[in-house]
Length: 108
Image (cartoon, rainbow, N blue to C red; front, side, top):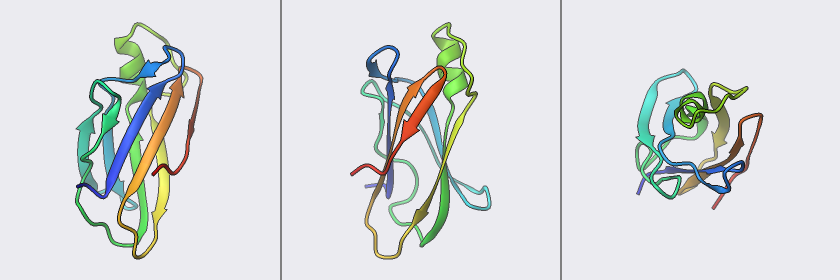
């Protein structure tokens, strides 16, 4: 199991956001994993099965997703920065998305 997973929900459509490109990076910008959300809007395998304590970033290619649906958006991408604490086993990064707003939180 990957240390990081993600889930994208399209609040405007009221459904999972299928086909969103997602990237995990180190704080220095080193790519650690790439994936695309499945039919349920989920990425279960994003990068390694372990991460050192420190700061990381998950990028969501929201502009490409909305363009593919024929919609304009204010956000060409969403970057979620977070800190991995020592001794943790898994982090889940959900994104609730609409063309002009988004929210995120630490999921389980």
